[in-house]
Length: 467
Image 1 (cartoon, one colour):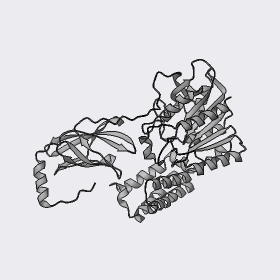
Image 2 (cartoon, rainbow, N blue to C red):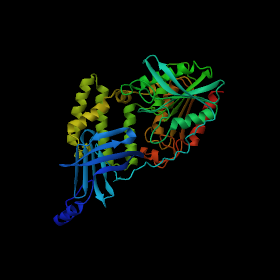
Image 3 (cartoon, helix red, strand yellow):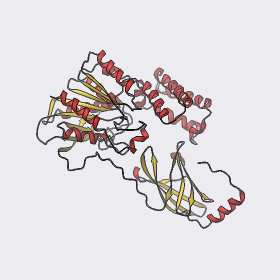
Image 4 (cartoon, rainbow, N blue to C red):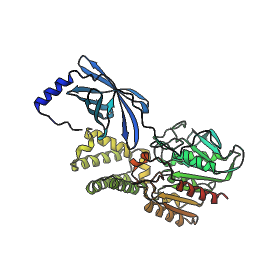
């Protein structure tokens, strides 16, 4: 937020009024970012030289974060947390509320503070099941001997005793717990509940290095995650309640990349379901994703084209790279030149050019991103021989249906697989919610977690495969 200079006389008046204002104490607010709510607390103390403060983020279990600088003058509060690139600027109103903006890494969000305890709005998620469940639930662990790690999850069975068809749920990108919890939704909890109530056993587990699972998520790629799924298959094969000939995989988003990897190299998979799985190479998907989300969010055509040119250059450098160290150097040089050519320096968000470039290079050269940019899903899809159901939402802006379903079908048929079903579900987004725009920021605002239409399509198809 920009503070404009006001007339000198008004400045004196504001200073006089501020003399009796008390800024010391605990100031609370709720930051709303893309539908997610995050409580923020600033603890401000009066000192001999002015003020000092710390910041808490209770929902991230972080307290006592040092605030680099604290100033309060003419009713205006300014706080800076340099190492986190955080700035807060607000105006005290009637000693009761501070109206202002919270900035981090160039992005700005409204954040009002008060001395009253602030609670997050209770999210309504009507589809989430409530215990006690009508089926059997068991906390389980199993070993990935290849990676020498233990994975933890939940196995649900229609009944404690019996012989059941089963599925393993494979989460999308980013560290996900067994419920694939995201923006206040728990898609895998809802999906597993629905399938189990309808006679299908379900194994869902925390990603490695997440929740109760061991291992290092940050150094892993989709190939590593596929070995975790293979470990899950081995575990299910040891269970007397599971029909070993009817074990399938359901992968969402990146999970839709991983499922074909596993199925391509295994005869133990009876079927796979790809929920918003990708069919085009990673670099193409990222460019398309950025364009569609940008357009839907109101980004200008010029900005979109400039971003596309820069990112295309980045992906070309990655594709041609032979040395990790040289890649970092080449990307740094390229991005520095791109910044010089781009007059819009505001995106740096107060960061130095070197810090900004370093941040971008580190993100691009992470093991997962390098693998994703270069990976073509068609390679594994051509080797999949089991039945495949591929579903996308019509308004999916992250994995657009037309481009991806066509390529998934083409690759499977090229490999000789004739048991292929592709479906586009009207008016659904990447999470398979009924939506208005498909923009990711909309996910958290929708009460529905998964459309009943999508759930019915998945179950109906699986029932046919497991007769």
